[in-house]
Length: 132
Image (cartoon, rainbow, N blue to C red; front, side, top):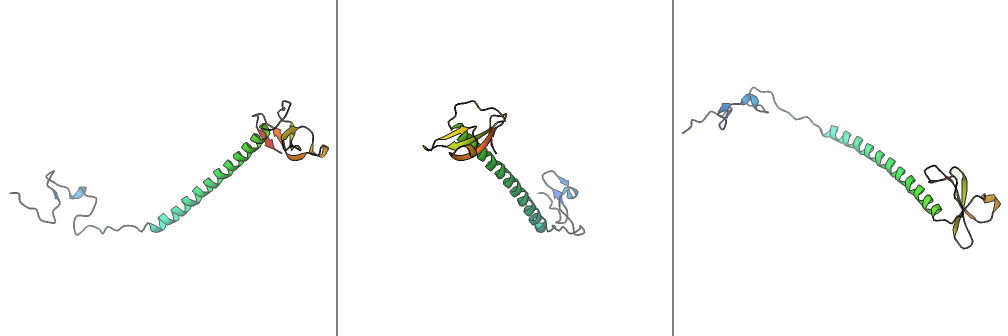
């Protein structure tokens, strides 16, 4: 039968050695008091900061997405319109709707015709239409 060590002695029976110095906590009455810091205020302040950063990034990405979708809609509208010429990069073109509600692209300015003007666009080097 093994002899029981007193309660104030820190002894590891599996490894058969004294290991008070290896413990991550105090093991005797003379050790300093272990207190936990109040981190609630720190956490709350940083959670608020992180939430603001995430929201700002989300708003930035949403604005970029909305602008991209607007460009997509313009390009889809123009490329589905009727035109009998090859547009030149950098030139200004006007999108109209005729009496049959068919959209078409033209080089004629809105002041020079009486069709419903849908917008003016310029073709860039990437073959994407930009609203003017």
